[in-house]
Length: 271
Figure (cartoon, rainbow, N blue to C red):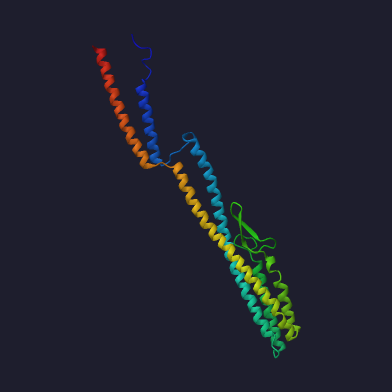
């Protein structure tokens, strides 16, 4: 009597097919170097990769912010150094104008030079950054997020320099109409502005250092996160190749064993 299950594949054939599919899957992983193609391949790792991708996106955004911040900070640094130089020039003019023997014509020339100093500083404070925004904000200083709960001031507020313009205007007027003593007295507030500007530059240097350190820290995290993602996502070639070789040997052995059994069964039927 023939079996009613004669068309159903034997368990040996099913096992061989499963093994052949595993080999094909591993070979695909070796070819693409990707261990996971679908969430069902490894749900836990897939979930971790999804979270890591969000972390990588945040790191990328913070690094772009830092790059933008460094560009603005460099521009602000150059402008503030020029402001400091202009204030020192203003001090030189005041000292020159405080002479007891200077002529009124020379005082007028110095006053005009002082006004030029004021115009230069005003231009420096009103310039735009490379992104089309005011370099020195008219309101609160520009703060840029560079990490979770971490911000950096890329450029100080224009308000920190608000005393310069009226002081320079006063100095220019006093040079024209004041006495040598009155002109000399203006050195005190001018030196105060020079000191304040130096302090602002010092604080700006600290903020700029935060940008540099933040970029270095994020680059290290970027590498660490990428390497960890690779352990979850990419194929270990050495291990995968070894597994394929072992499975090929097992498949060949299973096929050989199955062939011997089939031949024996055939001989039994022919007797």
